[in-house]
Image 1 (cartoon, rainbow, N blue to C red):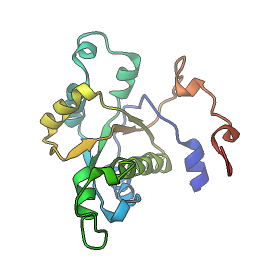
Image 2: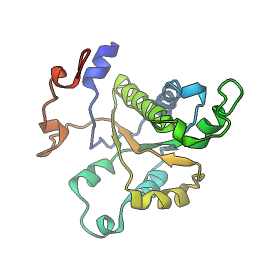
Image 3: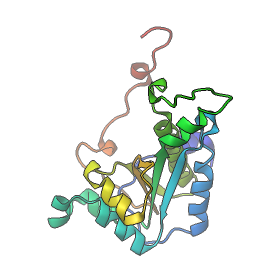
Length: 203
C-alpha cells in the first residue's frame, strides 16, 4: 500500500470481527513502533503486548471503572472489547533525564524544567502512531484511546508495570467491521479545512 493511502485510510476503529490477528503481524506493529523518533535516542518507551483472550480480559477488568463495570456496558465498550489485541504504549521519563545527563548533553542536574514539552510522552505517542499506521498497512483496524486516570494503578498492579513507566493510552487492534458510527463520533464529523490549522509565516 502506498504511504499516502495508509495516511488517508487511517481512522479509529471501535468494533472488530471475531478473527484472531496473526502473531507475526503484531510483531511487525511493534518492530515499526521502535523506529519512532526518540530525543537523544533515549528510547524511553515500552509496550505491553496483550494478545491472548485471558490477557485482553485482564486489561478490560483492570481499566474499566467500577461504575461502568457494574451496569450495562456502553456501545463503545462492547465494541472495543471485541478486539483480540491490545497494546499499551508506556513512556519512561527517567530514561530521558538520565540520557541527557550524559557528557554529550550535559544536563547533569536532571531538571525536568529543562523540557518545556515532555518528550518522553511525545516520542511514545509517535510510536503509537506508527502502530496505527502499520495496522492499516496490514489491512487491520486499530483505535488509540485513553486509560481512565482512576484505573492506572489497577493496570500497574495487574500487569506488574514498573513505577517509572506511564501508560499514555492503549491501542486495540483487530480485523475491521463496518463502523456505522454514532452521533458526535469522528465518523460523523468533518475534518477541519487545512487552511484553518496551518498558519504560514504568521498566525
